[in-house]
Length: 347
Image (cartoon, rainbow, N blue to C red; front, side, top):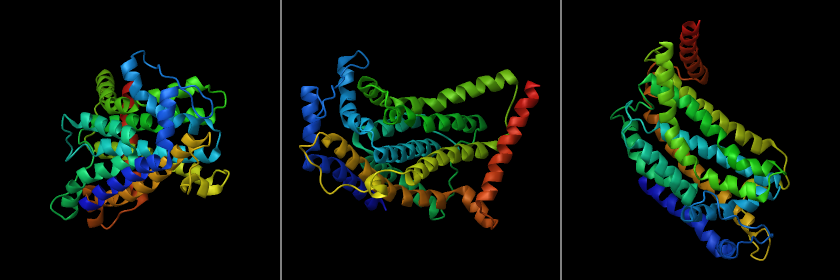
């Protein structure tokens, strides 16, 4: 399976960057960077933070996303919503998988940040299979029965902080997607939002630590201590919320009307016209459509191994009861019981 993920990462890299070079889109991106003008006449904004050396790292993303976020295409909106809600859910799952047997190593925050930055720099189709390649051994061992994996923190305060972190992660795509849905958004505003979206990996990497700190302060103020057993319920609730957000994005993308139907949304075009004023938007669309295919091919088998290694799944199988209804009831009981304790303290 290691070879599969490593090979898929190479396929993803070629499908994205190789296709951009072969189609001529990369040349158009370079031309915009040199001239400061897009093929459709938009002017490139190059100042965002006031630090010119740092701003240069933000410009390529601005060039890449400017046209596809401003072309008014309903098909492109559906593709963007589907992909970016998926990526934020994957980011939250990476965060939760940073705990092993209930403990999180000190360098896990830096690792989570690195994967986020790497993803934005090189594309999910190249990075997600590589993440699976570097982490699959842990879950292969547990799936073979050598041990069982406890996903998420064992500390209830750390687990509770995953819920607001999941909420924050679910809403961050709105920052990037707003220009695609707002005709009143100017070119300068659109490019500014694209640039500052590059900071979301940093924000999400520190969000859990910040939420955990705030949770501990609030608990101390209210003299409230959650039951240790509720840690699993909090972890599951955060994963379910994040998953439901991605599912909602996919349902909207699949069911909303658009020109060209689902083929236009998800299927890459056979040809990109280098002379077209929409060449960069066409290249970005092709890039993102291949993202969907490759990350699906990576995440489905990886998620299967994670589930096979789950200690919770092993226990439920031994009891011969594993259903969505039981899981929902388990999460609801833990959350409501803890909420009741908080309200009692407040009263």
